[in-house]
Picture 1 (cartoon, rainbow, N blue to C red):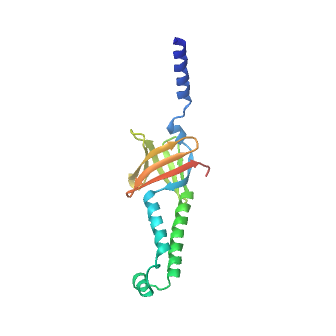
Picture 2 (picture 1 turned 135 degrees about the horizontal axis):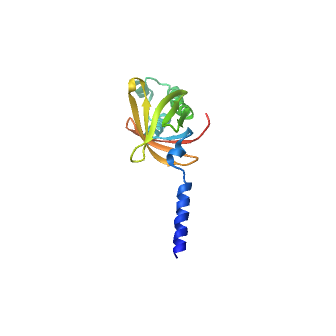
Picture 3 (picture 1 turned 90 degrees about the vertical axis):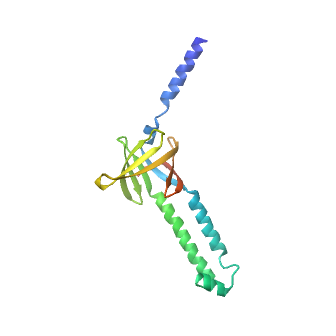
Length: 174
């Protein structure tokens, strides 16, 4: 019985030593591939519903008084172009977002081709903290909950301007 217990302890120790530390797994270049923001998703869905239904139950005089036009087809087309442009811009921003975490505790955060240098570390609760380095020794502090981290996926949850977002990253070369 003692030999089985000893063997179990050795196996558990080996398994634990084979698992990579989250700091070590984070150190690489990550490419953003998905953004989930429930509040923004609701607003986009509401805007789409408005576009799909605007002017359907109103007459020409009401449309002119309310929307400043009687040509609802053109009005709806313009609104759809604006919404589609917003979604394309959001996707392009995601495509152009990279987080490159370095071993020395710095990170290069790239948004739309613009690099920002940041310090990164984990707080006592295991949250990822980014302190953006700015001129005159000031910094912006961003606290992110690391939902998932493995060799192929990084998911970060954060709140900014009262909105909660989850960004999914995959390892990438830039």
